[in-house]
Length: 254
Image 1: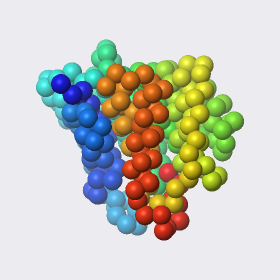
Image 2: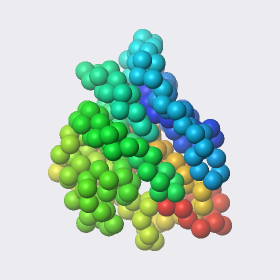
Image 3: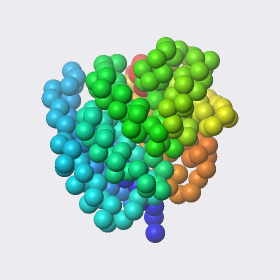
């Protein structure tokens, strides 16, 4: 029986990010999947048009329905902009033995902040203590840690700070950097795992890459991989997917 992966987050009209992208990644990495919609977003070519958070009562009902079918082997969260939804998920997931992967989606592809300070506070205090892995990019790591993250040295300091909030491990995604190589780094307890690869030039095809990494890592964890191996395989999976895209456009930082 394939592992059962549950994603909780926002719906994306084009399916390039959010729960639609998670479901696609789960399926491609061999996991049966289910989803909980916490926010419905309408993002157009020029940016956000509208967004509506799902009431906490409906988030709770979706979670109860998902758990009634089968207990998940892993849970992954994405954009959570509602404090009641975050608290509802934390209450429902607390006590589950499944590892939780938190993709702290705090900024959009143009660098715009997507969530209020209260939601960041709830994420840090309610969900991060439950997480096996949290996967911020450089901007999100800066927001969570309270210090600017610009290189591997500051990334390690930020990861150590974020780890004090309770997650078992922190993966800092370096795609938004400016060097010719992308360096992603995992702080697993006291061990610093470094993953480096050449930067690809893929235009806006890179949108959602961070969420793909988090979803793939979740799927590999559900398949029984160790945390470092799950992260390494997730990064390889996403790099292979991005490598297949056009290389004719300037790189987008994600």
